[in-house]
Length: 336
Image (cartoon, rainbow, N blue to C red; front, top):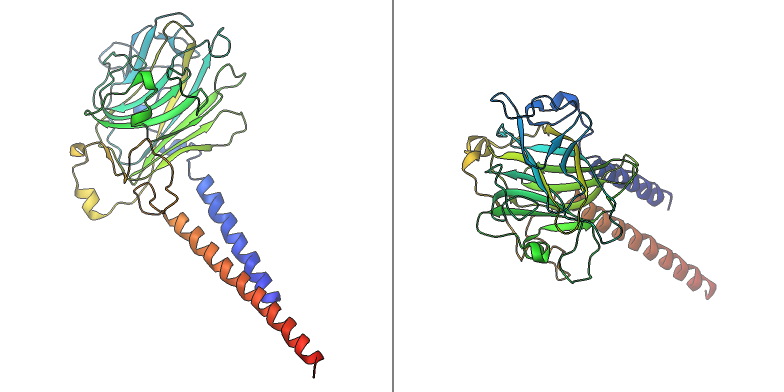
């Protein structure tokens, strides 16, 4: 029994370490890997219309010394800010510090912010002031429900990958094309709120920090995602009949140091078509109870957890069996 207890304790330690590694997978913001040419930070130098600018903006966007306001708390405003330098990193992580606030009460505010990694830039349209049809990745921080469905609460964060063949359905809040999402109370917080978008080895992870606890919480995690290099980062926002201040405080891009196979290194990443390998529709973004997961192989830590659970199950069964066997032996001795 002592050996079994020691094994269980050791296994528990390994499980805790693995969970910790997963939770700490999002970078802590190592400045060594900060890519300044793709980052937007105070005092926002390099923002403007000059040929040397690394960021330019459109619409109602106002650049101050403390924030970039994409829209003021006024009706029918649209604004965006875009990096002018194409990103050629294969693995990256974007940290967005933002603030959404206004005078509107519950359900009387809109519309939200979108973070983009797309082939084209500065293309005004109906989706948070950008095109509804695009090539690349979009992460939407949607603060107003256009649909009558009541199965989710807003503000709601979702992600979409598009190869130009699908139009984002704003009237349905993009339900038919979303890869996953979560609700997050980001409006009128006394502290700043944060979003992290990580793309590495074909896996897209979106994390949020909205409680001022310096802790990332997972919102979206999906594999089988293919994104090319050479696209542009941007942020946009829009208001309609309802409004909010939509502020970007910073956008910091970090390079992730990841090893790739020789085949991946020799691949022309600029020719990759944005896509997601799913066994089922993107809107069915939950695991199937019959065992058909979201179309991607299990990651290393999931395999580890499954094996550990199986091993612990075997140990528990063995311990229970040994106890039962011992009890029977003692009972039999009483009759002899």
